[in-house]
Image (cartoon, rainbow, N blue to C red; front, side, top):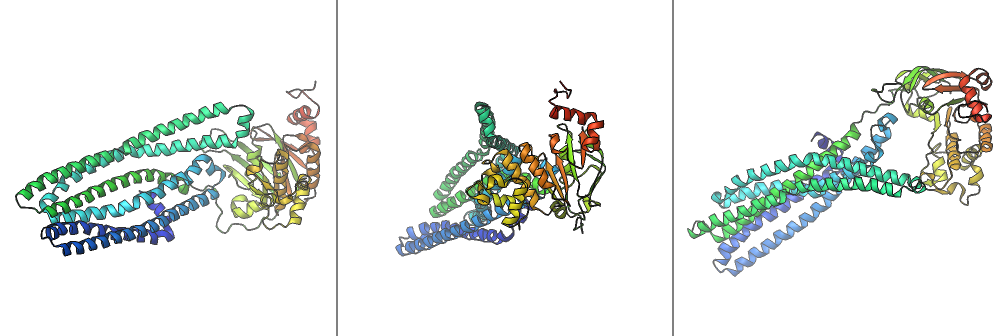
Length: 581
């Protein structure tokens, strides 16, 4: 309940709608509860005395009460819907804002499909609790208390039936809720898996088609889909047991009241109208208990969803800006001082270990190494996408922990290994690098990245629409747009993480030449091809998370066996082991 109570804090401006909705439900309930008394009087006075005028008057009064109940019911529906969907929107907004603050290490704690489910399905569960449960939870207690009170007012003897049936219904409800509660949690977890399978299939649909794995993917989906159906069937099998149980109790109660009430009528201890009105209250009380039972089931499922949402909101943000953080990066110099890093605290080995590097401002640095040597990990520590486990990373002579995060990251533009483009125009994508860039500035960056070569051939130029992920572009075109986007910013450090792997060597040479004009900017180029780094000021060789050697192309070619092996395999057509044929 603590999670639910916390989420109700996001009701914000919609609290007024919740209060108005509750008020109109109680008024509606009051209108409905007066009707049985009028029915009783109509029978015992109007019908018994053949007073037609009295019958007409009571009939009109009952019609007015019914009309009042209808109007207040419609007003409740309006305000409850407004409160429910507004609340859901506020929760999604809070979740999304929280995820935007996550560091990469925070994102590692959640599967993408799970985050999507928690922002959609779990929020929908909470909204349904308000739409379907707010009326019963407000109306139920009102009907229960007022109905029992009026029942005792009409006939205390018959009203004692509630003393028997209420504990039985409470025990049934308790047993059902205890059984179903953990099932709802498991159901939401299976939904995460289902969304993950669908997401992976749609994201990689081209690979699925290329490798003719359609049937395999269908079988994988069928397995998790069947598991979802089975889990839902089992969960709701127990959840709906409350309906037959409550109906059984209700009809048993009605039979008992008719039996005892009939005997009381025969003994002239009870009027027929009183028994009719009393039965109406019994029906309302039992129905209110059924409403409350359904609310408890809704609440049980909602608590599971509330906990999953709270996990997102309670996730400890690993990377935060310090108070009064540095607001200016002096230059693009970079220092790694005894830096080690591992992705999880319980990891046995460090991904990076004891790294010491000094990169002067304005230099161009090449980083090479075998796959898995932690090249990408190294550069992700510079803009604090991750924090070093031990040691210090400095930019412009200042510990990166002392910078305001937005200032630091504005000064470090990174083109990640995976090209990320969004649906929208080319201009909209490029302006991620600089929201205020005009077309002239954008075209200058495109020329430096050799992206103007294909953009100028497109009929709409910068207004060309990109599909999701830029799927209507080739790999090389996407890489060049990502480079142009990085060049648009006023960064002091540019990091290119294998960002020309899909570009031909001639185009890559043009890009390298254009990058040389950015003299005051420190450039770090991670590459697999030795031609991409051989003309840099320094080359850093990483081997198994450690700095193996740092030097120029000539120095490394003369003295370093790893560099010689890479050079031989790429430049001299060597064998797999790097030896010459």
